Image (tube, rainbow, N blue to C red; front, side, top):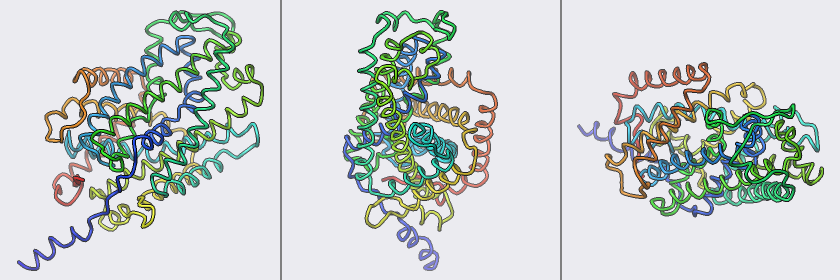
Length: 458
């Protein structure tokens, strides 16, 4: 009997991981979260293809996407304040919908952790090409390594670094807005009575069907505001501040993206320029090559900024998974280890960043970006479902979304609509990931609820 007790109790005490310190203010949380959204890079990378399909109606499309994103933000805010854990989506889903659903969510999150940061990093060389020609894979790998080194620092230092980069990014977006509104070539009514110009000088009507085809990309433009929940263990007074961080980050992202977009729509010199959506060329027509070069450099800085925050936040997910006993015991101990000085999960940070650098340098990982779009939509859908059920759970009372359950229902419907218009290949790949994750849970994890995949309460 004594040997059984000796084997059962002491190990749990010895392996209890050190907790992340609560040192982050709302301001620091917004800086980190908004850096993950990267409004300047969204403006110059995501919005131009949207303009080509939506024409002058792109502002209406982004406005509708912002409303859908607000519903998603309400879901993240309520769930994040009830369950302020570093695991983010998987941690929330597991506590509301069950360990199995949480495991599936975690496996899908791993796809995002592996693919998205190196894909973003690969865009750096394109925006530095105005100054120097760089090898794209090598530049992406260097950006990943720089981001990893920075992310190992304590969270307050990262908030300072990302805040500086974010200031440059916002300045670039503000300059685009100022120059665009100073060179208006179309009436304001263009924004509410839009058309779709083509490169031949003609135009097509902007219909509801056209708007809906651009909705998924519009939602993706603001994606990242929900990542505030990854920082919830490090936010002071998370029961109040998680919701504020999420909502302020979304509001800032919408303003920083939509105002310059409206300025470009109104100020593009010709309909042909607008149809081709060459934003750097349009900016250069307003302010010359110096302005265009500054904006390009700001976008490159925004990319580095985003990768830093993605590595930092993804490391928190890996850290939380180790604390929740997702891996073999020695791996759990290593991944949940905090740096003695900076109190960051430094091993998990290296696990996220170093493979990302290898992938950026050696693998055509951009081919998987379509899959990540579907994964993001599925994760949002799970969050919306969790928000519909959370008030039946025993989680602590905290911030409550207004008009519940309407925002969660509308969000779920919009996401299903977006998924219905995705590539069948990407949908099947995502379904395969879900099936494999569910099978592993059923065979291995389900019967080991006391020793494996245990949701820690912090």
